[in-house]
Image (cartoon, rainbow, N blue to C red):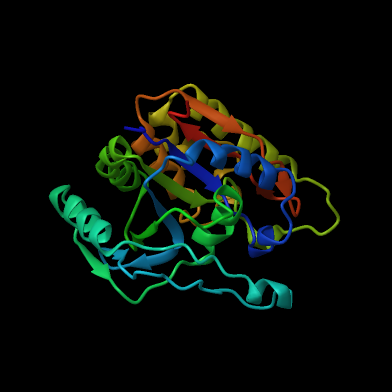
Length: 258
C-alpha cells in the first residue's frame, strides 16, 4: 500500500491560479509522486466553522470565494470527485479524536483547496475531501488535528494543509520589491520545520521574527501545524516557492515523500 505524504502548500493570492511563478511547476513535479494516492484530504483557512465539517458531496463545486480579481479566474473549475463514504469515515475519525465533526453534503471546494490542487493534480483525477478549521483553533489544536488525520496516510490518503507561509495582505506590493521581514520570517519557519522543532512552531508568535507582522491573524499559518502534525516522525522536504507581491512567501513543505 502506498503511504501518502503530508503536505503544506502556500496558496498565496487567488491569482496564483493564473500566475504559477516559481511554485506552480514544482507542485506539479511533487504531484507526479502522488499518482498512487487514493484521495486528498485538505484543510484550508477559507472554511472556518463551529466544530469541524467535512465535505460529502459526490462532485464538490468549485467555489470562487473572492472578489475584485481578473475575470478569467471566475471561469476556472476543478472538477475532482468527492467521496461520501470517505467523508463519513473522516468525520468519525475526528469524533474519535475528540473533535466535534459532521459531514456537509452541500459545501464545495474553496480557493484554498482548488487553486494549489490545479498544479498538484492538474487532471483532477484524485478524490478530494475538504475539512474545515474550527473558529477557535490555535497552534496546539492544529497540531492535534493533524495527528488525528495522520493515520489516513497509511491508506494512501494525502493530508494537505493549505495556507500561506506569510500573509499580510495590507502590505501587498506590486513593484516586486520583497519585504525583508517576510523573507526573514519565512527563513525562520523553514529552519524550524527542517529541524523538526515543533515547540518553536507552536509558539511562533513569540519566537519568530516579525511574527505578528507576517501573520496579523493566524488562520493562514495554522494549516502548517496541521501538516506538521500529520507528518510528525517523517523527514521534511522544503519546496522553494519564492515571494510574490513582495510579502507572500510561497514556500511549501512535504513529509514522507519517497
